[in-house]
Length: 325
Image: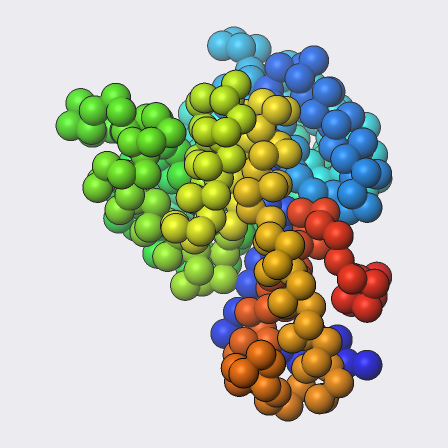
């Protein structure tokens, strides 16, 4: 039986594919807890449903950057074999950037899934980070970048086009601060960040740039981490209204709400399963389902629904689950 990945080729055939949640932690106890939680949830769901990004930028104490780089390297190397672990280094213009990449990537490069570079302003910043990886002997590592200023948003399409970039994240708090008070404080909240025109425009530019180049748009944190309902609604809006397929978590309590919000609903999984299995029986020729015509264009969409369902640990019909063995 032909596999959907081998049949449903198109403009997005080479698109980057990542877990829907990226969990950040920088304090030693929390980094260890995050890696342990990742291992436990991988066993629970049968797949690694979120990334852990160990944080040097906000995690390292001032003056203790080198020691923190050693710590995150040791943690990455000690992680479980099936773990997905990345590291956020300092910005390219920070004095610790070169040392971060040199030490971490040279020692743990084969164990890491990515390097996150914050405060990327232009393609030159990406190129500088790429050269640092190459010099560290980790030229294979992909870069994830954080867009945090109006100028960076303006250059989002150029940044997303760089072949080393696999994902772009939106840095809400720095973006709002960069406007010198022109965006009110409500723009930082769980409601205002989805309604203020400048913030909305930035999110749409980043998501559009990523989808244009087959990269993953990752939505910013929600600071109201103790409000599970607000977290869930924000994640759902980010996915369904703004096109984000990944989201940051800064507290373990946010991980499951993100998975739930970015996962397909049960009726979507059922419909996608019915259509894909019917397509297989028809050798991928056009079919009629519930009075609607479907062909490879819609098959591709429904395959993406099932892929996202698997990535978020949803229950799939046995016949469909065979595609993921």
